[in-house]
Image (cartoon, rainbow, N blue to C red; front, top):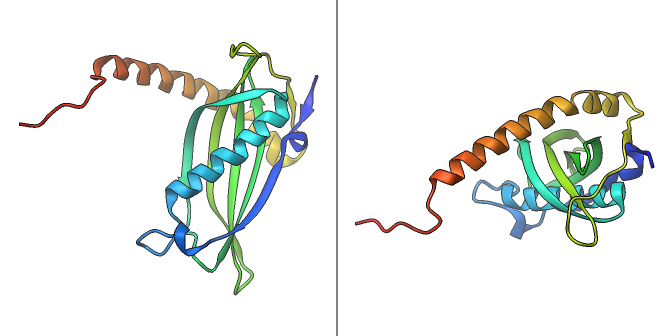
Length: 170
């Protein structure tokens, strides 16, 4: 069954609270990454209506700081699909609640893999983009997927050279 990007869209607005702030008086990056992954996982589940796991979080770009006076608007949707994997784009907008101005604060691409009842990769539907933004992201999705496959192979090669435990310094 074919789905549109709109079928997978998730939008959430949050406030920035004092416990979300780092020592620079901006939103802590780890908090933002956690929220990005959570929203993207909902888009992935809407796409395939089954369990999904995060396979990669790549191309996370922090473009401008998010301040305590901001609301944070997250928008995620599936942009591209493979056989059992799907790419989810997340756009993070900061809205200054005192001035009413908005700017894109971060963007991210994540890959999720759909799982069947036995925890094995499952086929995902194809995605149909409709808006200009969705069409652009979909058109460039295969290129990003190839780069992820290359990077994953490089990561596996690196991991094979690493030790699995902690090394003690003397």
